[in-house]
Image (cartoon, rainbow over all chains, first blue to last red; front, top):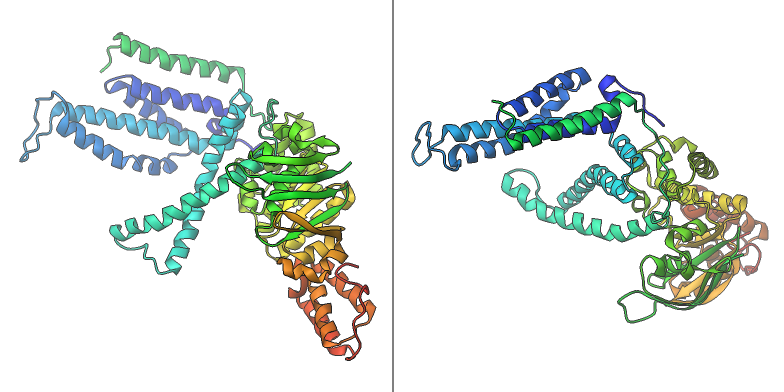
Length: 255
Length: 313
């Protein structure tokens, strides 16, 4: 039942990759200034090329654009206390301090998105859940995370079916933004009610499969791990916490 | 050693009236008991009560006795009930765990919940796959299966808990004739080979005619008739209770009313064909042709002989 590893980074234990992603996100957000996010982005770029997923990370980076735009606008124009106006454009007065904060925040957001992307692209979800379950994550936690992730494509399929049936009855769901927005209501209703009516039957089906048994759940797959990975996980985890603590204590004096 | 309901009365939580009104029925190991009735007659509720899910999981008030091998279901916890009695619902997709990426892992879901040794989990999964003849599905994604395959996987998932009894609430209602036939054949084999007692609520009386030894008719929460499948499914009152008799029964009546006589051996052939076709029944071209041949070849003016074959050989 084990899948063959596809390279060194892919073959790392899923929890190791989870800790790496956590450490990257923690340093990107926890270490102020330029150093934290830039160092993390460099590490992420090298990792992405090493793992052979660099091209597949582009959509994840693009997905941050709406958030990045709002960060840039809000911080550049409305940064509290900033007086170093770059240029005045009518009522708008973007500031240098605001722009700096906005760019740093942008780098942090992108770093976070890419750290999650590398984890997702190199780690099958069920591998991660199996490993976390083996380490003590409860069956309910495993079920909630696993079913939520597996539900996404199913909900997508169902949305497609409902949209098709609404179209068959004359509903126009294509064209302008307004038309598409109008199409959401007849889509959302059946989606939500359909999901709710299935919940009771699904919960009974789970009971019928001993989901509430008190025994410790059998682990079906044990994924490879090693002493060096265990050590690396602790070093990364504690190192990230130490960096944040040093930043909060004012010990770090990084640009 | 039976799954038995004796004077079972059940009322859903928050509702004012009993949905079941003193139901008695028994399912013996290795036997298939069919449950028929119009919509709202209480079939699904009987399934919930017989499997112990009501009231253990969904609450409500149960009076009377529901026992599995002499043990009151009310004294058992849901996971203990699951090991004694498996239950299968109409919709195959809602019965999948939604977390497994392969059918093998889907089947392992229940045994893993019991904390069994990994070797035992694998053995049970392989046994369930083999018993239902779906070993080829093991590496497939459970959400990418056809309706019939998904229902077989759901059934196998329940079987992996090795229950002595199975309660099936219209397990073929969302399946096409091919899917229905797959499930019907698997259940028949299961009862015969593993001595599993099966209670199956079904609208498709052809399927029951092919696989059930006994049939219980339910109307407004009460058992109105119970007996050997051929006898009950051949009863003229069945239609009045909103249950469509099997095709062979309808055909025999139609011929009888038309005054057409049919050789007894023909009914045996029809019953065999119906059994082979299960749910497909008279929709199948082969059986349709057989019917045409019988109708066209039978000499008029001689009445049909009851008991010469019926719905079940």
